Amino acid sequence: MSVVHVVVQKETIRNNKLVLSEIANLEAEYISAQHVVSERIAKQSDLTEQSDKIFVSRSAPSLVMSPRDGG
Image (cartoon, rainbow, N blue to C red):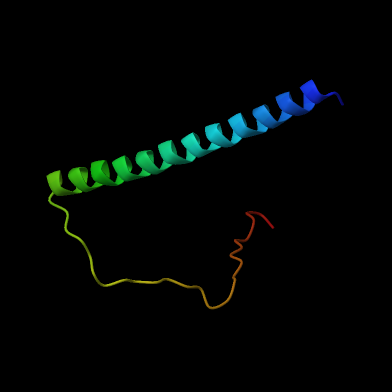
């Protein structure tokens, strides 16, 4: 590789990192805005925050089968 190629490659890597950083910042802003919108919708619908958490689990996997007609 020539010196020019090395310089161009380093510049490209640096620009790539800047773009990825900007994407991460925009994603964070989007998520924050999404929470604000969700909160506004919930308030307009007269929903309230639920403090008690309910967890659902299945003790064992099960398979439900039904008999075929005429069999």
